[in-house]
Image 1 (cartoon, rainbow, N blue to C red):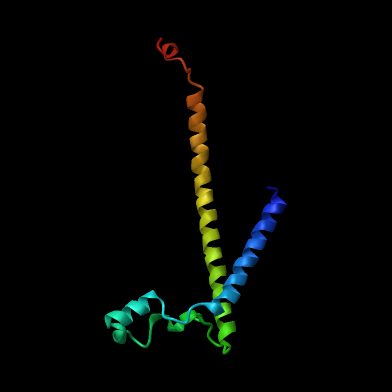
Image 2 (cartoon, helix red, strand yellow):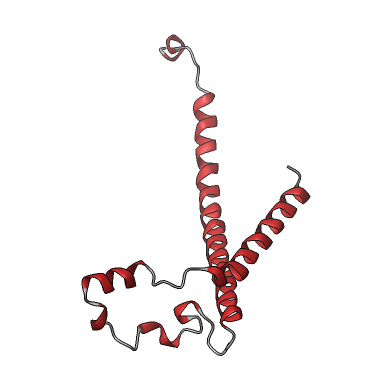
Amino acid sequence: MTRLGQRRFLAVGLLVVLLIAGVGSYYASSHPDGLEYVAGKTGFADTASDDPVDTDSPFADYSTRGVDDERLSGGIAGVVGVLITLGLGSGLFLLLRRRGGSAGARDDEGAAASSSAPADPSARRG
């Protein structure tokens, strides 16, 4: 795949993901998530604090603070979540790629040194 084709593929992929996050989040289930469901079934949901740790978050409870439209609020939260995840994943990938590159170069040098040794074991005796 050419470099331009690769960039086009990644751009279309990003657009599809953002579209799914922005539009698809409106159609997500209104039922509680797994932890809330189990808490309700086992009877400890009432012990939860009404003031959770994430109340200062602008995207608490899968919505965007300050946006009154429920559809838009969930869509913005979904898009921002995708962008944050993409940014963190890309940063981690680049960091590990740089570290792996220097170790890989050392491995290549070692392989080159060992390949210059004679292949015939009898030639080593001497």
